[in-house]
Image (cartoon, rainbow, N blue to C red; front, side):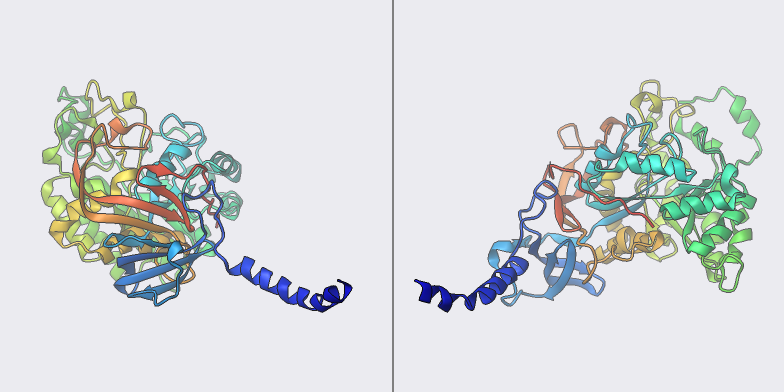
Length: 502
């Protein structure tokens, strides 16, 4: 027996090495509560994988939360069959990144909140949200209020979440306050050029914006701007004081004409020239949110881009899906600011988006309580302005875009690649080696009805203008950093999304 022990002793280091190799290389169970999938090393197969090089048939290898390889055609023996998920003809696409979301948390969780908002995102194929600094309470305008936001989100998010800070008059000329907010981790700043509707988030003017850009230049982060300036046009005072029907959408539309957008953008362009190469704000970037006017306002943006200003612009699915002529009187679900305009304007928006003049899409998910939408009395002038849309943006964009020649590659650009660039998310936005395994699996050809029986995860589904629609593009599964966080009506047990700090 002693002889046998001495014969086996030299083999112990070898056996230990083999055991360690097995532990390191064998597929491991993922954090069980974070994922509906049992392993953190697996392959996803599909005949339609959207990559930066085009749509391929092949496989994506995921390990430890990242994409470690992308194969064309078959796996050629690279994977064990038990860790392969074959999605057949379903589309594998980078997870959507929504840079314009109001989750209303902390302080107004009854409007939405991190848990319901991020569950809705996961069910819609969105893997990253950037939360706006207002509609929560208090608004995120200092490092102290940002800390409250971080605490509210911790362990309550099912997808990754980053944050914009607020540029307001009280901090615009206080460089140390703005730098404190940026150093705390916000990805950029957001301001309004008109009343925001939130008392602790007052509007800024072009002087505030110029100061903000000068600070942002040091950090190479963007300033997002709600570009509307109130203008007193002919008949405006009469309209405000008139007895025009407040339940008529046309009454509301008259109160926010395209002139407001045009005036704001014209003012912005007096300072964005500083973002050009060699300019005093080089390194800063200005992003115009939710463009509604596809005429004069868009022409100004195109001119600024051609002059070398660092500027981008987004629009939203509701401006692409709906038109003023289609909105029924009293249906305040459709109220937003800037407003949904006429059908001819919608056509021009699609044209600009397809031609690359509009850079990306966002939801501008802006929920509230049903009573604040005035659904009962249909008063457009009193109703909260905001479209509840977070879960539906992928099928809405696809459904309404097919007649304009939309492609899977364009979808990935508008909803993943360009938003990732804006927010500085270097490891997101594309199915590429080294990136986070943020992936949506969906079936573009499958139609479904958004009705009372369809599982909707936003807090107040009745607020959404999309309820009652028939759409194409069913989401099957959503992966965030390799975790299967949603699959056909079921979410992962735990909220394991990551807080994204700059």
